Length: 197
Length: 193
Image (tube, rainbow over all chains, first blue to last red; front, top):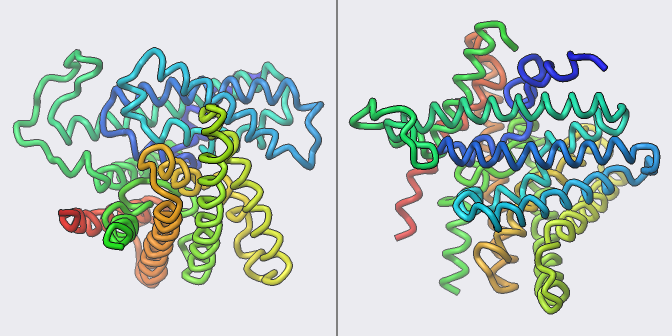
């Protein structure tokens, strides 16, 4: 058990900024910070649950059918989280829309299952999944904060105005698809310049 | 007929699967550095998307809906898609080994290409299309994917001839190009009305 398994997901091997995988939800639902929080919560639940289960079952899963097995486990967890959000938080359920079931095919979840959980102990998998979830949450929050701030001029999270109105004429382009690609590209360039990644 | 045409224009241009709906981004950024690979990837996506959309529609309305078990659609759909990808992979490995090698990891990744599962879910969940309409939608979405990835590959191939700023070289620049393409495709949004 090494703490590195946890910290690597946050910066050094950040799934979004460094590996550039699992981009679909990152770019699509980051128009508002509260959607990003909902997505991060759902994603964390699925990643932790499915990878812990895969790690626990890793000795019983035949090698030849491991990918279909992983997919079935992951999609079961997604179905559970879909039920939970549908039951308890209709607003987030509607805002995430199609991207909630699409957590199933998020490259990060399957990638960690194949590259890590299927080969490592339960304890290390817990650290790895938690680190990746924190890394994912961090990146999705950064992108959504930038987009909402510049796109609407303020940040409102669950009805509370976190950042007061700073722009009277916001750049609407930031909450359009253009803004998503632009913010992502600029962030990658900034991280590279700073030498973080 | 008019309705189908509207679906095609919407799926290819107005709501382009990559540039507006953000589906299938991993393969879009991963494989778009060469035009030839992009074309093959696009064709594979069109094939898998159309076939799996037809299959999943039938399964949803004739097997899941009668027994009120629509909630297991995610598990069922992804298994159907995985089977199809396996089929495409076997065919390409047998007949086009060069392209098989060129694809590398991205062919198995079609399984986890969000565009495929996304379209099948949009067909039954969001839009509730009929069989013909959902097939047309899947085909047109695939064409939209092909269009976007070829445009991207063309631009990236040409950019390699020029000196790029070191900070932006590679992925960051690809995102900026995608942003400009998305901005261009935003212009189609007026066509809906």
